Image 1 (cartoon, rainbow over the protein chains, first blue to last red):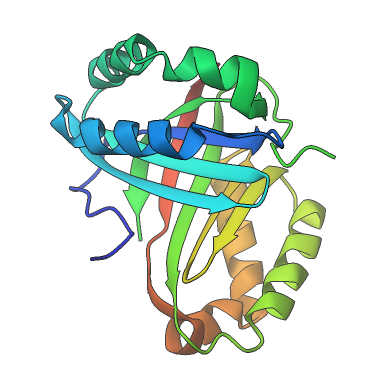
Image 2: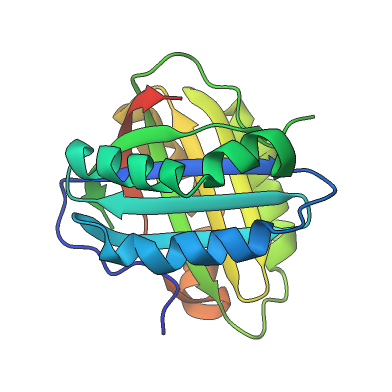
Length: 104
Length: 104
């Protein structure tokens, strides 16, 4: 299976989430796997690409609308994943919301 | 130094480039390093985040405008990097151009 998301024609939205990981990331893989498993069940989900290096991770997920992104963010927070990440797993992170306009 | 790009307030543009790598990627690291080195000298460059896993890479670069992205694409092509990538290093890739609207 391709790790490149099979997305529809633009426009759609992207959530670009790079993160610098802490040294102790116990539990991170399990929570990340859980989030990856439930994302496709979320309304408006179009696809996700993830990459993990030593000390650094990137995830870009794709969504039909800003409302779909808000719904996903709320659900992810309910899982406590973000709270854990902020305090334990991540040394730094940022979330960028972008509108995909063109695809080559 | 942080691997998370220190970008200005939005709006600005992102080039999201996931790629599935071939088994033989000889020369890939050198060309990738060269592209990473010259990107900051390109007009309109704001930052870049990259991640490399076995068999998969992701790069998200940030730019002031679509014109800046066009300039970068032309320069990268002049380096023959894309041509090499298409035929040798990449099993599959896609390039998404997106307008960053919000950052958390």
